[in-house]
Image (tube, rainbow, N blue to C red; front, top):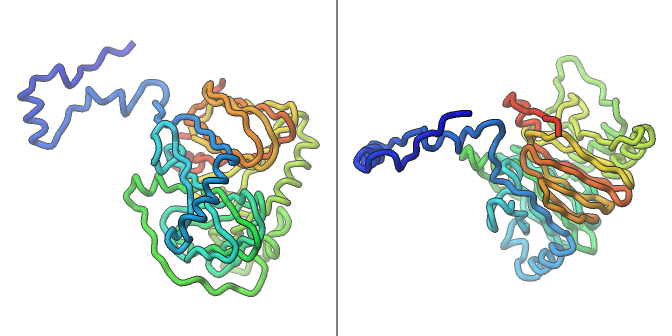
Length: 345
């Protein structure tokens, strides 16, 4: 067992005053706060957001605040461990529910953090990324990577809502978060890459000599195809939960440098009980009902709900009927830093 470290109160008042005047502080009283033994000490707490409760608040926001005054009309999903107003759902993941009403446009901008949109409800919405118009249908995953211009519009007749997932906390911590605004983009008169170049897994446009792979060749991942792939995998999974990672179709790497996205199908009666992971995560329910237990917190979820898990969380998700979820996680960032790990339950 390690020796008990000294405290700040053990030191003479005059010595403490001299250190403060010199702009220094002793490490030893704080060491176990920043380097706890065995595993991290998480501030993040399991969070749960019922879409049935969020939707009326979003629609009321649409009545109270025109999109011109909001730029992005969003309700932030705040980590319970950090409290109301926290601009993060886990240590590294920001989540927000965004509303766009018929006829509205959200102005173009570009920013350093990367964002992904998971469409929650509605038809007729679209995102334009560097001139490519991306339809937004329920369950679709749409990328707006850092450094890419994007704006949103709505050509339908009913509200469109999507879940924003950003690596914003990382950029805020690094003091590198900023945006630049601009006019709406001119749209290319052609379908997006998911409908043309990358319609089938394992197939990509022929590469010309010397042409390198594009960093973000495909910006939209249609849910219709994702669900069909999950169903096909589940039919041969031998009772295991079906999981598919969203990847760059040219390289096979995660779609973003710091965030990963995994589509899941938990069949009726199945239980997902993964190993303890060093990455935090957020689960968005596309369809289905069940019960999630995260570090002892119990959440009864239905379609369009969202819940989060801290690092090394004990996670059990029991499906009452066939459940389809998208898990957002920071494993790509941890792997780049060289410390991602899994531990047996």
